Amino acid sequence: SANMNANEVIANRALQIAGHQPGEYQYIHPNDHVNMAQSTNDAYPTAMQLGMYMIHKDVMTALKALIRSIRSKEKKFANVIKMGRTQLQDAVPMTLGQTFGAYASALENEMKRLDEAAQGLLVINMGGTAIGTGITAEPGYAEACTKFIKKISGWKVTLAEDLIDASNDTSAFVVYSSALKQVAIRLSKICNDLRLLSSGPRTGLNEINLPPRQPGSSIMPGKVNPVIPEVVNQVCFKVIGNDFTITMASEAAQLELNVMEPVLVQSLVESATWLMRAFDTLRTECIEGITANKQHCKELVEYSIGIVTALKPYLGYAKITEVAQEAQATGGSVYQLVLEKGYLTKEQLDKIMDPVNMTKPVKVEL
Picture (spheres, rainbow, N blue to C red):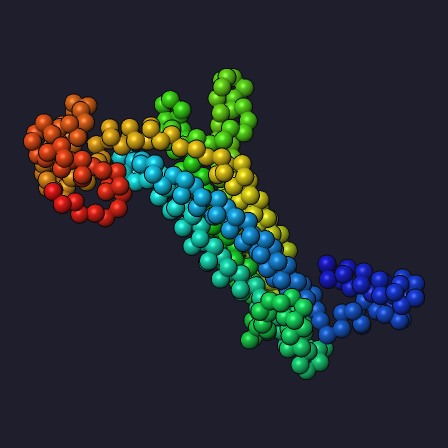
């Protein structure tokens, strides 16, 4: 095992430092001395949990940087009015800044949950030895070892309340993987949106421009694909798949030990490191270079039938339904039809249809 190998390496290095030859185990023995009072079944899981927590700190740093970048776009696009959509149909107006603000909020919420999940990695079973009973360990060893690990790491490391349970339990990994999966789900949705909002340029939504990163086609000249959101999507799919592997590996525990921890931890480390790189790639190669097609966004809002929703408090459901249906049938604008029917004056309509008033709760005095 990895623990046995580590014991041998440490023992032989200690022998060299002490002036002996490698293999002279009568002086320092891998099992009798280096492995004293411990087992693969407590040292290995403890090392994996603390190692995973180290990676978590880097994941948080990368995620925070991505969120800051998205927040900067929220400010930059605060005055870009666009159409919101539900079920891919025109809904009501919003700002592009609100769109990016919602992305940042989504990731902030998941970041909090991820950090909460990571705290479980700091609850260790060191000192439980083979199955959690603490056989071969000195009384108080588990507590002393935990205290020392806490001191040298600076983290809030604690000893599990029931070491027998902790010796076969991998729920800390499962919980953390689940939180990573949720981050991946939210991140993938953001990438889906970026691909859709940048679609076109002539026959799609074309509300934003993603920075071009490579020629998009070997047969269609000039085509540029949203390759960065696409690659991040695929990283997210991998994280979601790894979570299932981790779930099954955790479920496979038997009696006093789970021997499936190697594939479990390998999958979790892969998920965390891939996602961390995806955060950086999305930030530097995509988010930072996004621009808005402000005029096109404005024109889509003005042409949309969805803006009739803003008129409902003033004209009632029946009248605005009539206007919406006529606009749909004739291709006319909602604005012009309301004026032609004499439902509102131009001054009243301009107040209601003001972009700022349509993107937040406002009662317009007519």
